[in-house]
Length: 84
Image 1 (spheres, rainbow, N blue to C red):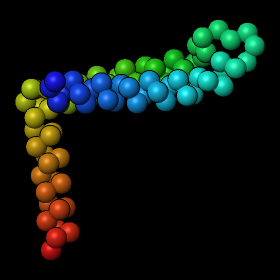
Image 2 (spheres, rainbow, N blue to C red):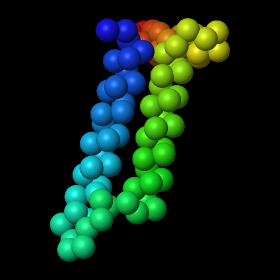
Image 3 (cartoon, helix red, strand yellow):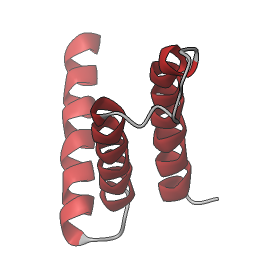
Image 4 (cartoon, rainbow, N blue to C red):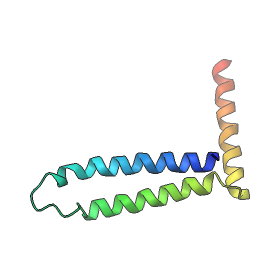
């Protein structure tokens, strides 16, 4: 499986899990209607947008590759500073 797919599915799974945990209190109330509240809707939209960003960030576009290279350079610099 490609790294891009793994990362996106992992992010999406975590965000869906958080969304479910956030909805459980509403599910225990009488008259529960799938817990479709403004907060649920906003968090769902945020989750989809963030998963889309992760999908893009691990993609082959020049801008995404440059962003990953910059992040890796920062990590290497911090690692070198820690090691002395």
